[in-house]
View 1 (tube, rainbow, N blue to C red):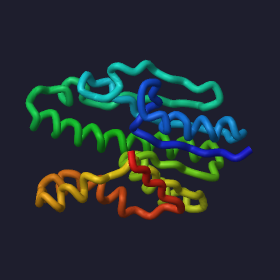
View 2: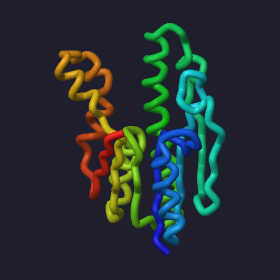
View 3: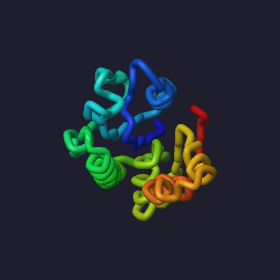
View 4: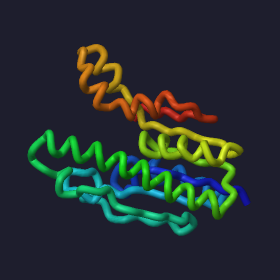
Length: 178
């Protein structure tokens, strides 16, 4: 049985963006062993406060919550952005650590990094697990073009982590237009 490990900061949803759930679900239905390590954003300003936890019967899901929930929900934009960025780096680190432990225990053929945090974490795993195939998936990053067009260079600098994730190599890059 083939094995795939997903690393993501985006949890499954019932009400929107079904591809997040349907992609690993498809692998599971196709007789793959699927492990999904995910950071769930429980903040009131996040995009999960209205979503229930969704589990899929043939997928092993390991969840942890994003850090600094209340600080990221601050009405002060600077505080909210600062703690959101710090929390994102914490998510990358935790995805890497949990992914490392999973790769140490199982022989995955593929590591699937979902969005910036998952892609960066999976690329750090490459240092230790070179023989695996790596998939990078993004939901689209049109805002980079908009920042350049509108000369919002500070926004690009603040989102340097996204640019790095896009630059990192993978065996397969999936870029959707949603």
